[in-house]
Length: 406
Image (cartoon, rainbow, N blue to C red; front, side, top):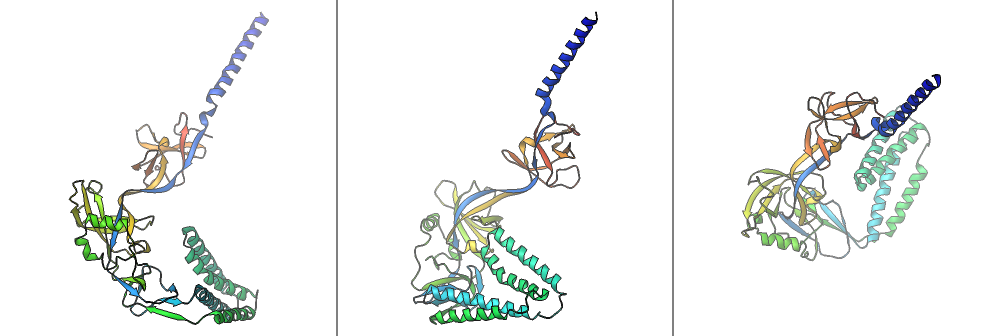
């Protein structure tokens, strides 16, 4: 009898162990989830088109041979009779003068720093703050790809670092360094040919070093009569050639126009006088524009000549005669969420599960944009809504509020 009960107990235990291991195989991952972090995200719906710039421009002439060194970046405003460029005999002259200018700046900052020699060091805190500020500005310029701005901060950084060395007593004088710089400057001066021609602006305006040959032929007033054929002709040949002796041009006003052939269905709902948003090439700067005219091309294909007027003058809109544009239909910004994370709670409210302290918490979302595999949700007030940096569950089994997860 005892052996019979022993056998029954052994069989029951064996079944229990078998069921336990089967459960481990099939349900061990029940508490495992895949997550992603909620980050901010933005996107735009746009209509691309290629346009032709219409501007009131005057060519600046200065016949002669040599190498030009421009004093202003494209799009900079200049006054009448101001120097817009200098002509040198060779590239060597330009490089020498640039190095001399940099040396003189270094001499100036080192001389200024020496004035702190022998004074108390109560300015160290302020100097350290300036160093951190300059360092941040250099990093921001490098991250944004503006290397010229980062380089421009180099002399300023030298100045505050030199002041810190003097104030702390690390060095007592920069006289040796200044003397060496003066010597190098004299050597460079002796290498110059001395042949320099200054070129002056004939009037006021916005200077551009590039001349394409359409100056005076595609003006603001030409927008009233420009045709689709003319636009396509310019798009096919945006630089027919510049006149001899042309060194640049002056744009009379910050206002400009762009003409393009666009299918009217793509810009459905737009009308003359309406305000729209454009972007040029990959430039993230939004440009507010007014549609000044819409003229049917007469081709019977639903296209029309659109003329936009803008007053945002940047290097991206003065560097060429044509450009790739984007007409911004809609812009969206918020938190990006994978569509696989979308869930509904018992009240049928739309949301996602997030991991908080090892447990699942349901957070509501307001969807602003539906993409193919992601959503953009607005950032809402209140703890019941999804927040920036929340850990969102994108995959998992048997999800519910309060579930303990790995």
